[in-house]
Amino acid sequence: MAKELKTNAMRILDKLKINYTLNTYECDEFTDGVSVADMLGQPHESTFKTLVAVGKSKSYYVFVIPVAMELDLKKAAASVGEKSVELLHVKDINAVTGYIRGGCTPIGMKKKYPTVFHSTLKDHQTVIISGGRLGTQIFISPDDLIKATDGIVKDIAI
Image (tube, rainbow, N blue to C red; front, side, top):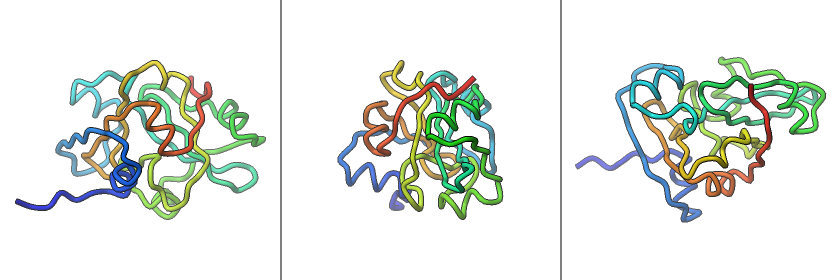
């Protein structure tokens, strides 16, 4: 039997002794989070996507919001004390995070960036995030996710 390939996110959760459940599905290329949730019969409200933005100060920030919502750039900037933020260009995602588009997760990026979760995160017992590569998901409690990322919770989406 082949050894399961762990992502950096999984290794970090294991090291922190944080419980999570892994889910894998067939995926050869980027598919948006709403389509993945629909394909797998998962609720949009508890399935979260990871977005990376750069502030006016040139610092990077991670924002995690439900897949069907959009990041409110003004609220996102205010949540991290920036005048403004803009989403990172797709071509820069791997260089900044170490992950690829569609496989980006807030846990285990190249550096630990300030991470903000949308306020609805706490409405769920378990949330779903990317596992660190295409076709991989992590089911985790909101408190454990916040702990693993040193994240904060704010109203950042519309």
